[in-house]
Image (cartoon, rainbow, N blue to C red; front, side, top):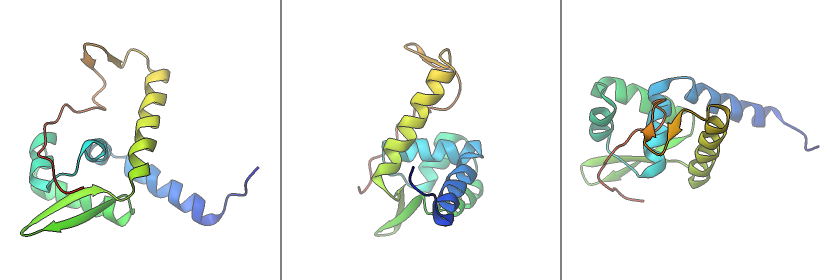
Length: 122
């Protein structure tokens, strides 16, 4: 069995902290699909720009998202492409535990947001 260090535990705690808030979880799920600007994220998730700013700051502090400047625009993306895979695996686990959550007709649990955000820098 591999040893678990304090840094491993701290990383898992940061991820757990990020996922403990539904807005942050929804942001991560959106960024899993494509980078986005904060105003588009705020509008799509139905939160104020201030709330979005605070949640993105938290996710940056956790090391899960990064900001990319594109002229006057700031795009956000997942800090590591592996995180998209991990989130996908976690979603599959949730679906196995709660099989009625999402069906071919659509998601009823609110985890996946049907968002059409502009593509940004990758």
